Length: 419
Image 1: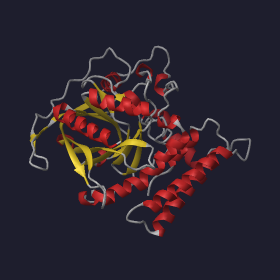
Image 2 (image 1 turned 60 degrees about the vertical axis):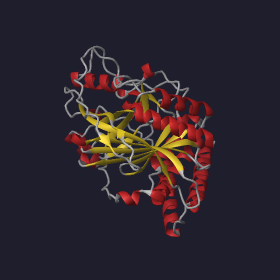
Image 3 (image 1 turned 90 degrees about the horizontal axis):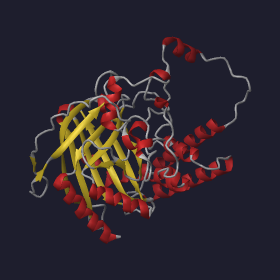
Image 4 (image 1 turned 180 degrees about the vertical axis):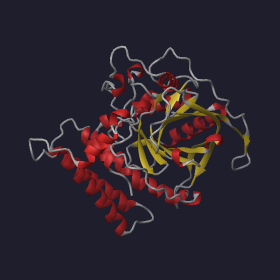
């Protein structure tokens, strides 16, 4: 079941005229879009499954409307028992320097044309905006399906069911929900320090590494990436692995970010989207960091579903041996010229589908498509901003290299010819 709350609440919050009538229009459209897509899934969903998703959406709508309801009393009530206990026990949100609230609403804050220098401290292009979310509940238990169950038609169906509503809502709410291209970057809480206050040494090093404001501190030592290795993809062709680095926030504010070397393998592939349909050309990248027990399987593909307001989709599946590295949130991929540069985000919207599984829809506006294509062709490195279930931030950086450039260029030519 998809989590509609962060997606629908962000669409409502972005309305220029936020009234009960405009919110109702968003809700009605969301119900229609959801039902249409659930009915269109092949193989068909059961009526029980459809009803379950509709109930989940209605529950979220009721929750959002309750948040906009006026208070019943003018005078504030006495603090609840659990709030008082939390305060005396020291559970103060101010102790968390990375909490910004708002669910997934700030992951894609920075878009085309934004001034990167105006970004808040933290990760570039929205890295620092990866929030803890409104809900501090522990991550839900993971039911890890087998790799085979995630492949093929079943996996594609899960993507459509869980991702289509989010992308449709983004289109309804307008360009402000795709990427707020005209809005100035907000001032983050972390920047509201008293005059004379400076970040700790560890914070400065972490911000320097992953795109925060420049610091006089020396950057951490470069990791030793895994040496290039030969991998044999399907078909017998030999692919050369490229460099990859996993940067992780440490628990100690005075300690530099941890950097662990890995490798990335790119390849051009074809997939069968369904019975009676032509094969699709896709680009795959497998990024492995063996020392951390962390792997990303990434797939770029052209969007062929006319109901999705996206030119292309990026599927990201993470695998980890340490539950502390289970991925809770991702940002849009960011492209950069070299390993040490700041990334420029693609124009798109990330959507959480299941635990460790995410879909990014790339904007289908003509100007965004042109810009995204240029970034994919011209930049040599890619960053994926992450937040673990534990709350720690991380960045997975990996190189395109010759194999990645060739695979992307070949796919872009094929996709352009299919439009």
